[in-house]
Figure 1 (cartoon, rainbow, N blue to C red):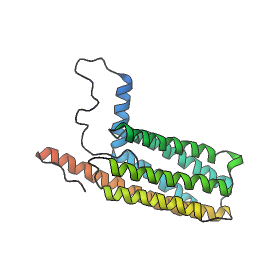
Figure 2 (cartoon, rainbow, N blue to C red):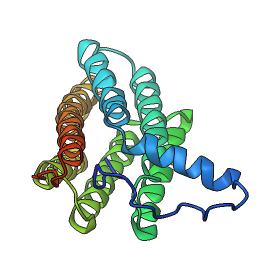
Figure 3 (spheres, helix red, strand yellow):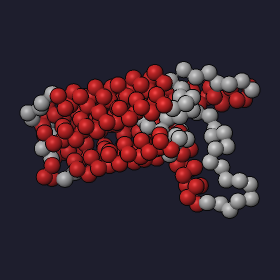
Length: 221
């Protein structure tokens, strides 16, 4: 959920001067920034968390290898979503935080897919640390972002991630089935919270568009 920022336009920041030659790198970054600010991108990120959680809960008897593969794919996909979302903030510091979080997700996904690391202890450690770090960076982004709609909801989502990380790290699991149920439950909960943020983001963008259309500023929560 990094990359959230005000739903209005960029106010001219980052635009090249008139008559300047097009910059492919800048153009690509602007496209990624627009995509990262869209509520549908947040929706996709939420589904990337929710669906693996439902699969794991529906099939908790799967082997540890299956659980590790599902977690690895979830982390890689979430890392991709977070990489694009890292372009959305306008401040370089916020972008760096989102980029580092995306890199952590991708690295964790790769580690989960490695056979020697597919143990209950290692998987719990990887996922717990990632959720804890992601929750903290999301909370930081929500506190420093300007014009962030539904700031309280984003902070609530960050708190859920932090608690999930602490619980996974603190509660020992002895079997793959117990680990699958624990991680599946938190994945579903995190996915539902991210889905709520995506829907709230859509509502905020619609209010912003309506406010600009009527000549009045859009109300933010």
